[in-house]
Image: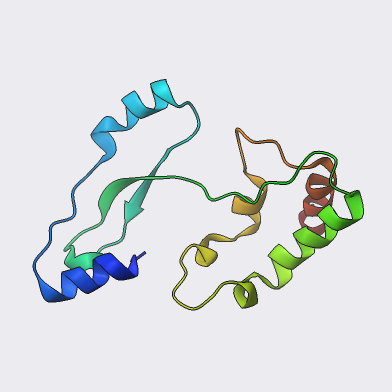
Amino acid sequence: MPTPQIAELADRTSIRVLDTTPVLPALLRRYPDAYVSTTIPAGVYGADAPVPAIGVANLLLAHPDLDDDLARRLVDVLIDDAARLVPPGSLGIQYLTPASLIDTVPVALHPAAERRYRERYG
């Protein structure tokens, strides 16, 4: 947050951020574990207060037969170097925390990636 295109629009005209969470139960019935409740912080898009919203995870997927050493090295890159990999203006890197990197439910982590996260974070 903010999404650059929406922020640009908010700079040019008055917009109102709406709470989208009333539809979350229906979405979760249809697509279990795909959506989460989140919040658009106060001040984003001119909102006076935080606004409840619906979010989705962005996941880097690996085939189960990916070489274990490569999976381990990918984990190290995500932990140590992610900020350098994301182009300016891209969003989401601010959420690459140890908890968010290992919490990929309902998608299982590659076994070697899971082991590496646990080695690094206990």
